Length: 116
Image 1 (cartoon, rainbow, N blue to C red):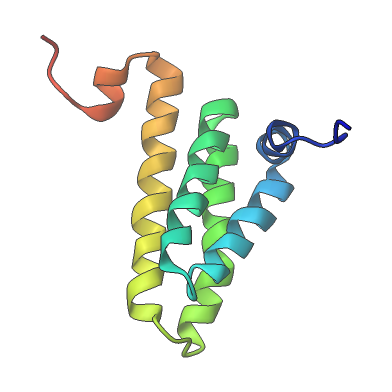
Image 2 (image 1 turned 45 degrees about the horizontal axis):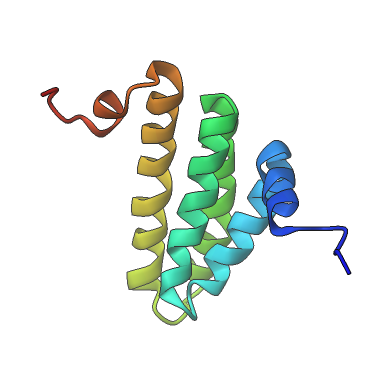
């Protein structure tokens, strides 16, 4: 029996709809306060949106995803000193590097590595 929704379809829906990306990345960011490794998933969602959409949309998704975590961090949540900077360090650079990769289509430019 084949399920009507696959993992790929869900990811494609999240990437195509900025509000869904904000909600999912924000929710994952809030769960990162309990499981810090989930901060990587939030950054990955921001990076995928930056690859698919324009930079302005990706920046809105990055800031919108960091907003629930910021509210939770400043309200005195546990592990706020670890997770909130981790969300910012993973989300914004992913957004910038993915936008550079989308614009230049060159991985060496996006990663700022010298050409061989």
